[in-house]
Image (cartoon, rainbow, N blue to C red; front, side, top):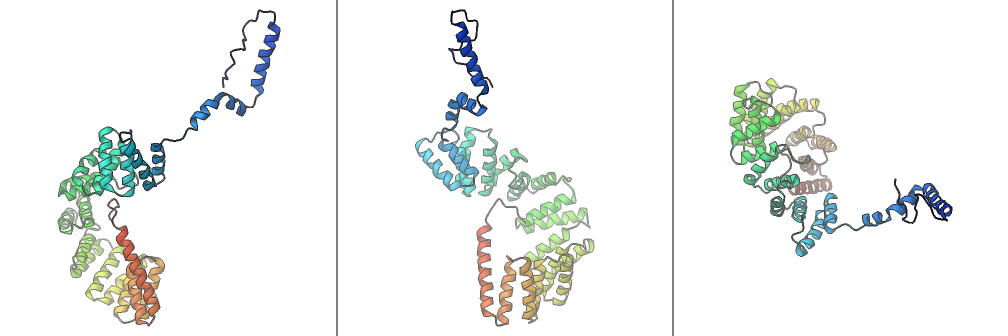
Length: 374
């Protein structure tokens, strides 16, 4: 570290009569500086710099810090004040857009992020959040070009751009484009059975089941023993309240894929709806044998016991299911019915109240448009 030497200390040749005295003073100063503790030297040399660095943050910087800490309401309060006094502050629109995005107010976020993008078209984060805001607002028309341009460049804590892009294509009835996006996403050929199957699965997730069926059947034409194709068709038939055809499709799935517990569970569900309880019990027990943590299969066994007028057995199954999945809504509702038949009215009321609470929470938490569809 080079420390400043006072101007009065001339270390060059000293020619006057006091040269010895002057030189000794200069040497003394060097010795003092040499042996002064480093921390003290830093205080001497950088006192002005320290004063500068301790200057208070600007309101915009404070708002950015609040956003980083996940406090959009506090940040927006500060940003709104800035906007009222100095609406042209550089970076303000981007921060406002980010704040409203974190708050889930996507229409407001879109308005501010569009302004921010006009001010700085090269800012990647603004483009990312604008694409996500368009999508979350249901505006796939404007989200599409941004998602196409971004490619894989979306924040890691959100669904991938190809996934959102595929959904936007589906909403615009561009199914071939959606299949192309999915094929690229999963690194499979465009005309492969898997590309058609994945498109069918995504259509099911978007509740476009009528459009999904031809895609899945096309996948089976290409590869008749394709795993999970008949399973999806069975799920569609259950959704359409057609358990007979659902059971047929699940049976076909088992002929090519006999080791997946999900198929046994859903086949058991179809049999329960058909009133074929003995057959349902058999496949549900097989599902549990393959996956003993399958709460849903155990719930169905509890339902069968209720239908056979055995509330004690039903309560045993349902209590076991809740030990595995305490948030299982069906288990709480059916356990309430079992307790009611057993004369345990207080316990039944408690289970019904829990079920009502879970249903309310499910409705409140099921509106995030940026969640991946199961």
